[in-house]
Amino acid sequence: MHIEKELVESKIAVLRGRGSANNGAVLGTIALEGPLIKYDLFKELKNSRRGIIYPTISRRVDDLVDRGYLETVGTRTIVVGKRKDESSTYGLTWKGFIASLTIETVAQDILRVLEKNSHLKFPFPRKVPLRIIGEIFTKGELRLIGQALLTGYLRAIPKDLEYIKPEQYLMYLFPAFTEAPKIQEKFEEKDLSRLLQIPEVSEFISKLLNDTEKMLEEPLLGIKEIKKGLSKHLRTKEDESIKTIVSKIG
Image (cartoon, helix red, strand yellow):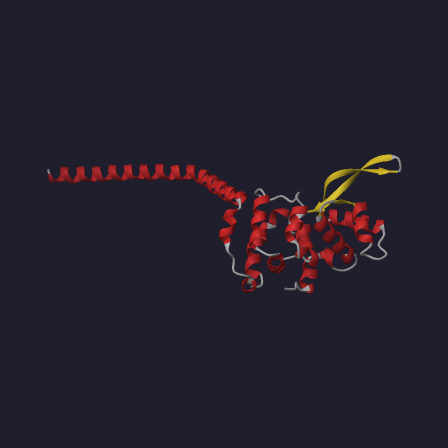
């Protein structure tokens, strides 16, 4: 599928107008290669972007950091002449990841992007879930899923991505599912039984079930205690009612 250019430009400010081509090139390169220092990013881009100069790339990186699409994720020692210096490495933020999915080469290799940008935080260990996804879906199917969800997400957010706060990212994910184009018919039938033959997957599922069971134990015990107290209360009430009836008869 193809993401509408008008939709992208209306919801992602850095991908419209002046500097948008260089912004896209910077985000796409970092997405596929992982965090880079400015000079290495320039070396990656100078062959594909004719006439590009280092100061332009440096300004684009600084601007993307200021606007929340990139962040400093570490430093690397470089040698300038005879002098050693520390240079910052820049990686995608989740906002930058969302924007990078509009780039075709990124959409074609989403798992690589997530593996290369390991600083992007998940609410769970990432290794096994990413492997499960890789076993279930082909690259082409992941591209379709990513672009469909991105289309739904951009339709769902009420304003430019730039003004969505990090704590609000997940909040628009559920509306994105309803706004996303339908793509199920384009998928092959899946045989999920082979997943259980992968030891890491079996261990992951087993641990997930055990953790869930432990998490539910305390609330379930509380519910049992409430039920026990309620039953005792009802029995007491019944006994009192019977005594009242007997006393009236007597």
